[in-house]
Image (tube, rainbow, N blue to C red; front, side, top):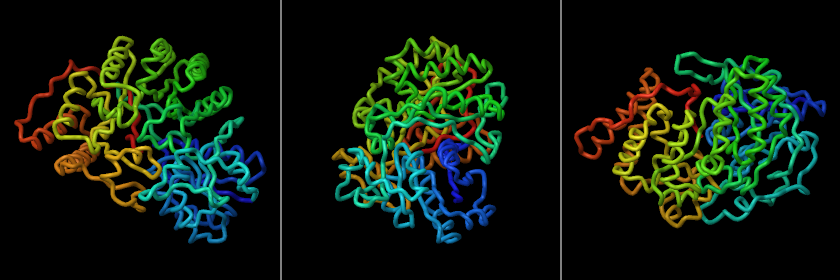
Length: 472
């Protein structure tokens, strides 16, 4: 039986979401072909797709799912007789739309074993577990939420004994995002996962509707084996894709310490909540000393009211404390934000820019972060908020999200102008500081102010960063 696994986008990384299930399926004797359309064109593999007995699309994020909705139509036209599946974080949240597109099985959560059973024609009715977020979040305005009325819809939170991902046949690592150092040197980057899911219930997070506060550990020997094979394939840096690397702090630090012992010249990056940065401050020096190039943290906002709405678990003051800790440790901090939401005003956005400058973080911010707009997918916990319910429109089946507008149209105009400016400036090679200065100028213009000087800490060296911009 020939199975094609398709990834449309995974943040510029060689797809873990293909390599991991490929190992499971190949172990059972299936002929597996992995296709990453971020690097490979569908049209170049039409014969392979036409000959497949089954095709499974990996949907780990919003952008990947939107691209996949169009790819599904194309592949079904090439091979209408094949069986079709969709799996990954965004699959159960968009189950109805996927079924309308011809997908017979939708799998969320821990998908490897379920893909094997699907490939073998085994139903999953006895294992269906619909987390509370998916089971109860549906209301009059909700669409695209996985329902438990068909055996083809499945969310599993089963604790698995993982296999080492099989990366055979995937495009080589050098074709993906790289780590760029302050010197201008670029290093080949690999990607792996030490945990899945998350303990926390941030309202805007797409992980919550599926995992609902649960997280699952990928066994240490499996993670390290995956790192070893990527280093052998040329990786000089590893991105850990865990939603929060400190959900299991002992597990996490044990892995990076072993990584550093075996490969002292290989760097890595991780993502950690502000709440966990403060709770486990004593572990941050161990990250620094084992080769951590930078730590990403979803700060989202400097407004305590907004942070409470988002249920982030940290405050404005916590952010300032974290910045100070990183500065004292000499560890690079890379915060991310949702700069535009229904509570953003022109004045609050200008304050946001001023704080970034005053804290010396201009070089730490991927420019795209200055224009990120709140995304409200189906099943989002944001739908619990009366403020959100009162401002959203009907679910947009093309955008896979609820449309919304800021009460002040000038804020939405600013966001669009900044996004366009950042895209242009990035393509022409403008520096982060130049892009930031232009964002300040545009914002001051919208406020009717004379553009002001950036009040900033002294310039610091550009921190390492991945060459793929951050998208959801």
